Amino acid sequence: MTFGEQNTEADGHAQMDYALEKGVNFFDTAEMYSVPARQATYGSTEKIIGTWFKKSGKREEIVLASKIAGPNPNFGYMREKNDFSPASIKYALDKSLQRLQTDYIDLYQLHWPERKTNFFGQRGFKVQDDVWEDNIRLVLETLEGFIKEGKIKHIGLSNETPWGIMRFLEESKYKHLPKIKTVQNPYSLLNRLFEGGSAEICMRENVGLLAYSPLAFGVLSGKFLTGFDHPNARIRLFPQFSRYNSAECTEATKSYSQIAKKHGISLAQMALAFVNQQAFVSSNIIGATNLAQLKENITSIDVVLSEEIINEINAVHAVIPDPAP
Image 1: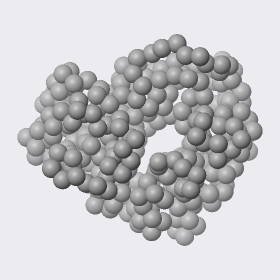
Image 2: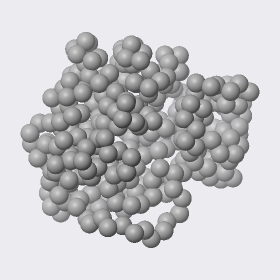
Image 3: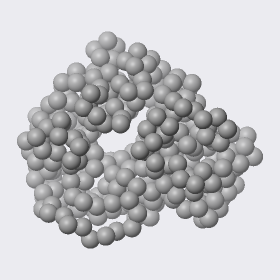
């Protein structure tokens, strides 16, 4: 999602070349990327992936995922309505296919719920003035049509609650409609809320978590504990993304950094290895703005955390649980 904002087309192509060379075959993007979302860069990440497909000829080697954006009053430039109506899904999907220069998307996801609920860092729950009418059956029927056309292969959710996950599963089970294969939610040492209810659903219903922000916008790399400002880091360039820069996040990160140092591994690799080892995780969605970061991230797959390290991580989590919901 940095391709087209923090990364040029050449940067993006170099990262995809390296990732594929090292065995990474799952690329995830979204129509609204790059981030932060704005009209000038709308669709830029998909375009860069598309030009890489055209240049490399390696589309068939990649499991490609993208997403349709949900309602947002600031996204009027995307289409007439930011909903999940049949017309909106068709429009968004066709535009993504054009930008990606492909005939199909392997995994098509709903980027966030159409209804008002908790996501993107909201704590607690409050009754909201929500005029949303349950259209989940219609959404699944619409997506089924595109599966039959060959435009998408599988479907998934993102930023979804346990109720939402089960509602989609219920509708697909009893109406014989396509089943969601994945849910893409935040999951990291600073946000383990997925464990509270959604993890059991995923395990029992065979739905995989695609964990995003496993390094919490770079916070869990430990670079902000070094005394340097890192002016080009995402949370410095875009201070509106405040999810991972609270005092509690800093305190927890310091504690996790001490564990990593004690055991002779980098904080980034420990944070990624923690995600990799969870039984309910299907893919750990790493993100990097340069090749050095990408190389460190990818090699985390060879790191296995001992029971001692896991116990020490859990001790910190018990004291500072989920500072970045």
